Length: 583
Ligand code: SRM
Ligand code: SF4
Image (cartoon, rainbow, N blue to C red; front, side, top):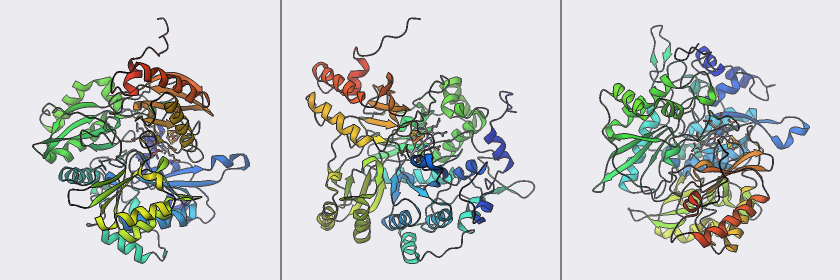
C-alpha cells in the first residue's frame, strides 16, 4: 500500500522493491541462445539499462519480429568524433544501419536483435559512454545548450550538466556486472575503442559513484533507495536568450543567469512535462514553475533535493499521474518552495529576471571564441542514414575520420560539428556536397525548427505515423506558406504519433498529435520561445485536410498580423477558435 494515499501501489513499484538492483532475469535471458526477446517483468527492468523491447509493426500481419531499441547517454549532446565512429560502426553491425538523434540529445539504435544487445552495450561502455538509466524511473539524459557550443558560459554550464548527471545516476551494480564485466566479446574494434577512450579526457563520465552499503552489507542507493522514483525524471540547462533545450518542458530546469559576463548561478525551474493520454483528463501537459535562484555550488544539493521530493511525494499508485508536474500542480508552487527550503535548511532566494527570445539551432558556419569554427547541420527527423543519393551517414563518418570535430546533438534533433580549423572548412563542405547533403546547411526555418518522433514502425505506443510522413507534411505546409505570401517564415511545427509528446508538440506553434491511423489532433498557439502551451484547435483531423486547414489560417495570418508578429502569437489571440461548449 502507498503510505500517502492508502491506495494499492502500481505494479512497477512491486517489481523495483523485489529487485532493487534492477537485474531481473536479464542475465539468464542473455545466456539463453533460444531467447529472441525479453519477456514479462524484464520488459520493465531493461528500461533502466537503456533498452526497450520492440517489434517491427509493419510486419505484425505475418507475426512479430522482435528487436530492441538502445538509447545512449550524452550529456549536452556531446559526442567526441572517435566515440561517434564507434557508434557508426556499431549501428551497421548490430542495428538497422541508422543512428537516431533524439529530442533529448542522445542517440538511439533501432532494430537490435537479441544476440547483438550484449556486444552493442559493452562496446558503448568501452567507448566511455553508457546506456545506464537512459530510460526507467530515474533521471534521464541531461540536456544542455549545444548552440553555440563554445564560450566560457557554455563551458561552465556543460561542467554543471555533467556534475548533476553523475550525481543523479542510480548506483545499481547490476548494470556493470551484466553489460561490462558480463559480456566477453572481441569485435576487433580495439583501435577505434582506444581512440574513443583517448578522446574522453576523464574516466567514463557516466560511471555512477560507488553504492553505499546497508546494515546487511548489501549495496544501497542513498538517493533512489530501493524503489527509485515513481516515474521518469528529466533535467535540462538553458542559457537565455536561446531556449534551445525547451527548458520549461523538463521536470527540473536550470536557467543560466549571467551578470557582467559571468555565470553567477541558475534559476531553478520545476514541474514541466508533456505526456498525456487521450480521453484521460487527469493527465495534461504542463510548463515548469520558476522556483528560485541558486548558485553554481548548489546545483548538486538542490538538484538532489528536488529529485528526493519527487521520490517522496510522487504518486506511486498510478503511473499516468506519477510525474513531479502533478505534485506541483496539486500541492502548489508555494508548498513546493517550502518543502525544498525545509530540505535545504533555508528557502531559496527569489529568481532573477531572464528572457528567452527564441529557440532552435543555427545552421551553417559560425566562429567560436577560440578562433575555430562550428557548423550547424540539419538532420531530417534526426535520422542519420544513407538513402539513395543522400549519404549523410557516410559523409559524417568521413568527416569524423579526417577532421575529428566534436559532435553535438541538438534538442531539435539536429547536429553541430564543432572545433573545426579554418583550413578544414572547405574540405568538410565538399564532403557533404559530394554525398548529396547540400540541404543540411540551409534547410529553411520551418524544416530546421521541425521535429517528429519515431512512431511507426518501431514505437509500440504509436497510434499514427510521424517520422515517416513528416518531411512530406512540412513540404505541404511550405507550399501553404508560399501561397499565403509568407514563404520561408520561421515556424515551429512538431508531430507525434501519440499523445505522449516525445517531439514536444504541446508547446509548438503548430503541434500534431496522433489520434488514430491518418488522424491527428491539431494543437495551435505555442510560441517560438517555448514558453506557452498550445491548445487543441481541431480534434482527429484527417492527415490530408490538415495542410488545407492550416493553409487557410496562413492566409488570414498574412492579412491580419501586426508587424513582426509570429504565427503562434497571432493564432493564440485570433478569432479562429471553436466556441467553448455552453456550461
Ligand atoms: Fe518519449 C515513451 C521516444 C523524448 C514523453 N518515448 C517513449 C518510447 C520509449 C515508447 C515506449 O515507451 O515504448 C519511444 C521510443 C520510440 C522509438 O521507437 O524510438 C519514445 N521520447 C522518444 C524520443 C526518441 C523521441 C524523439 O523524437 O527523439 C525521445 C528520446 C529522448 C531521450 O533521448 O531521452 C523522447 N518523450 C520525450 C519527450 C521530450 C523531452 O523529454 O524533451 C517527452 C515529453 C516530455 C515529458 O517527458 O513529459 C516524452 N515518451 C514520453 C512518454 C510520456 C510520459 C508521461 O509522462 O506520460 C512516454 C510513455 C511512457 O513513459 O509511458 C514515452
Ligand atoms: Fe512513440 Fe508516442 Fe513517443 Fe511518438 S510520441 S515516439 S508514438 S510514444
